[in-house]
Image (cartoon, rainbow, N blue to C red; front, side, top):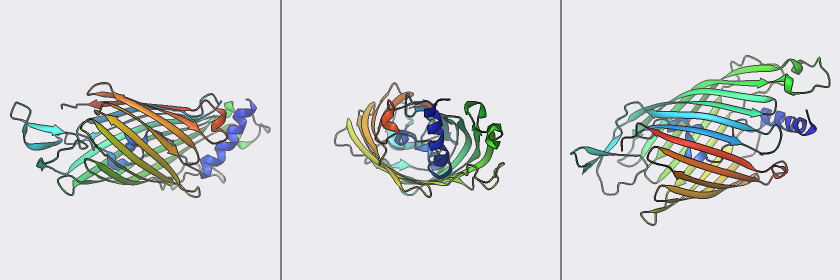
Length: 325
């Protein structure tokens, strides 16, 4: 194993133990469900997303993340407008984010269920997550809703000794390790047609029932996220969406992502982000049809390690299943 991979491993070990352990996402704004279980069942369709992230491209042993997420309403009926039909004397359903100025609504509470499968690999270390989630969405007014959600699952952390060269072959780490831990997260999500505000806590009590508690073992840390966005629409075809994501995990200082996206006719979007003391990010995406959309992000790092790579790439494919309108 070359020196570069060993150097990365030395950097990764303390980061896994004390810094942010959850995977990093540049397109969090199009899949907040990865960070907040209260999103579960928000839309009036089954929201499925497949994501791939290659961080520090060109660097051996750099982080690679793959995930599959999906969530849907339990009732599957959605919400409706009054006094407007689709030509067949039937109510017209709408997505929660669609503006409906001056239209009376019938808004009912609803439930949602979902799940996430995630695989994260950094050099000889790998992490696998499997979670299921539930959320309850309560209307506060005809436009504003509050959701609360919880997710539970397991996390597997593995060290593959065959990918590391040890100075002492008798070192305990040379036998490898596989640690299983429970995973619990909770969140709140306040949202309307033109804004959202969310807060979540991830990896709560992750080490309470861990299968491996050796001294110095990679202990999971609780992560806290706060995010918000607001949609400005100066015309019917153009909209601006600034957003912010605040991340904190003890004992690392608070980190902030600032983002601005521009949407054109709800079919095309582009934007940029700044991750505090880490990277500048370019974003772009398009809606392929009423069922599929595609997003891409390119991270240009400002840290010393990021500057030695060809940047980071992230692709997200979204699918809207059982969407009838």
